[in-house]
Length: 137
Image (cartoon, rainbow, N blue to C red; front, side, top):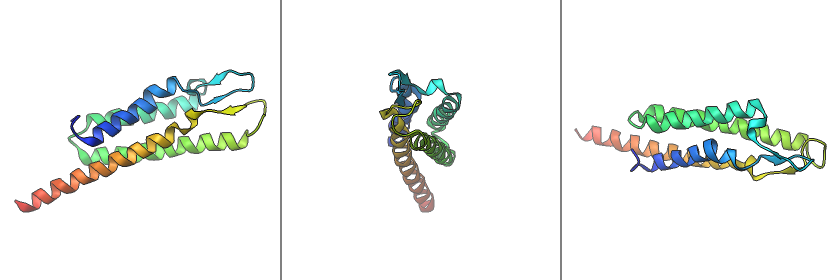
C-alpha cells in the first residue's frame, strides 16, 4: 500500500486538507484576528468531506477504479472550495470590514488538487499496467 506513489500523494493530500488547515489561517480579518476554516460551518463541511474522501481513497487501495473515482470527486470538491475562496476574496476585496488580508490558506485547495491529479495519473498508470498483464495471459 505505502510503496505505491499514489498513496504518498494521497497522504500528502490528507495532511493538507486534514491537518494543515488547522494551523494555517485562510485570511486575516480587519481587526487583526486570523480566520480559520472552523469559523464557517460550510468550509468545515467541505474540508471534512475532502479529508474523508482522501482517507477512503487511501484505504481502498485494492480497488483502483473506485480510488480513481474518489480522486475525481475530491478534485471537484476542492475546485468548489477554491471557487468559494476566490468568490469571497473578489467579493470582499480590499480593506473592507470583513477581510483585510488574504492568507496562504486560501491556496491549500490548489496544492491538494495538484496532488490529487498526480495520484490519479499514478492510479491510471497502475490500472493500465494490470490490464496489459491480463492481456498476456
